[in-house]
Length: 231
Image (cartoon, rainbow, N blue to C red; front, side, top):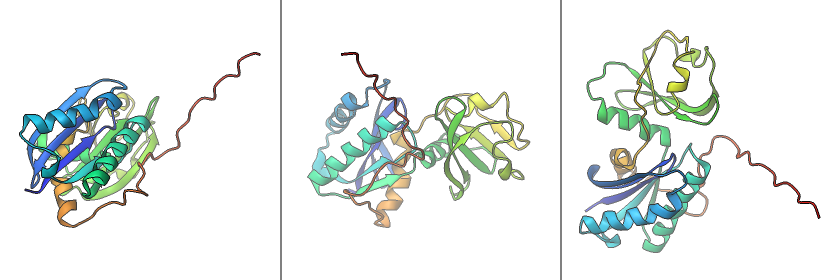
């Protein structure tokens, strides 16, 4: 049946979906900060049960590989790897920002702008961003971490751009870029948007190594050192 299970955990939104030949069958989604570790397997089990399916029907698993939440990405990838190993099925990895761009294409089908600028919040005035052609999602600028100022993305001048995602809104008031418009409603990457992308990777047999694949964090994790307690 070419069923692909998709897992998206890069933001506070945790979602899983099943697609057949790229077409959405069903999605389960929750929004719970820090709830991915508790909920992702529960969502998968309930998604399969509610649609009369089991793991033997799944031909491959697709996972959002980043950028995004460090913890969320690790949980999503670990879950996907574990299932692929146990079921002996291939793993497909998709860039998070491309998933977000595909989501825009599916929702805003009549938009005339030519380039998409999806952004995910990376805290303070930093975002993860990439640029894609609207028509075919051809990559114009690869995913990167950007500290926003009034001149950010000046190198993309000359063609109209649409900025969206939960990182775009905090830049709207200071952006001086002449070719950028903004979508005010927040958009998040979701598993339901992964179907066509994952199916093309499946047809091309573009599968990932279960041992070596790591999330694409784009920047190093900056943790805090625990304070030494007085003896």
